Image (cartoon, rainbow, N blue to C red; front, side, top):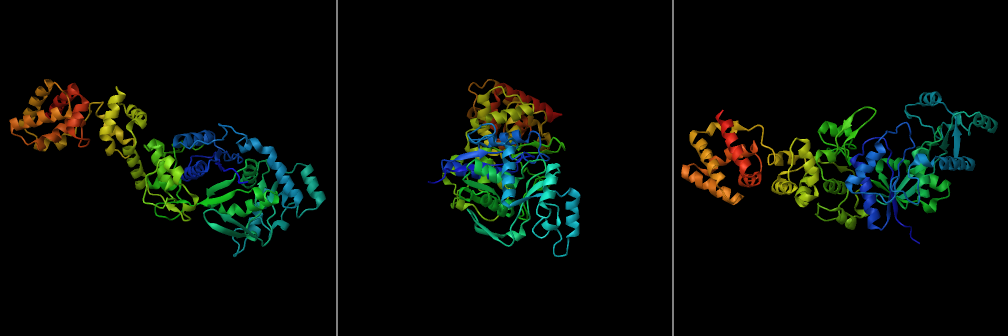
Length: 510
């Protein structure tokens, strides 16, 4: 009988959620939905020294914003609860002790000073970074090098110790990766990883295997940086007698720096001027702040679309995909083996396309909040959506609406009169004086009627329309931007348009 598809995202609550992590979530989510499966969020908080307060809530909020809600999680619950590893602590020791009894693991009593001495004493030109492995384990203080009586006394006296896996010598360990095909390792090249720490907490290596087994995970997707750990995990599945229940693995390609050299990091984003986290993150310990895609003005639809095609395509020229289309078309076989270069300009292109594609009502509340934060009060949601419809083609980020839409609701405080003054004269001043008086009597206020009156008055005054539109724009907008000037006047309203013309005349004259 085929296993039910169950996938998991298992982050550590140690900081901001990198876009590579969100892409891992996305591929898990798409695979689960495509196969009528279950998507699990499991918090791997076993390393208490790296735990950061608020990070778990931040991760959950990121997934909510992206629309990638888990089916089971610490918040949603589920039949395999608890979903925080720190709450599952007792079971890990049982399995670690079982491995010791079987001869597949051992107690190690080495102090930090002894470990440091090992790295110095065993250093050679051919081995500049010695590891705790088959070559040195007999020279260290552990249950393989000590007598049974010594070990029992150390345990009875409560001497701090860890449990390490005993890696076999010169064995070939293989598995089939869903993206990379057959992958093999030589066991002698892998050190004896710690499975259980001195505080009784498991390391990632033990916890991920025990939890994937306990939670019946069918497929495990993770970044390719975890590939070197695969032999340890494969052996644990085997030693614990669970190899028939082992999930199928897929190691996802890295998201690379824009130049393709190395994995994209927060430092790269800071240096090149773009975010690498899904949302704003402030580290409570260092007070360091990082900007997120959300706060910079990205739509979640664009963010998800951009991430999906960073390392995957459906074999066609299509670039814009809704989440529903991604679920329908996603196939792990189409994920690339090589790393994908991050391109911030392309990311912004996706956002621009989604701003144009979605109905403005879909994101008008976010724009309203941005305007209000900039001191622009929006008196009518209906007017806001009319304005957004008019200017959305000019907006790459949601934050662009502040400049492109703000002047519809708030009289510009400053006018770019320098753009007008060189060609300004008394005739033009008289034109706008007359126009403002005529506009008072205009009965049907719409763009067509405003434009008609504007052009008729220009003909009367014998001035080219083209010479008058820039001053009109500066008066209404404050600068040389925005949609058609007559559309602007129509939405700004009669009274405000007339006020801005009169204010503009005063500004330019001064």
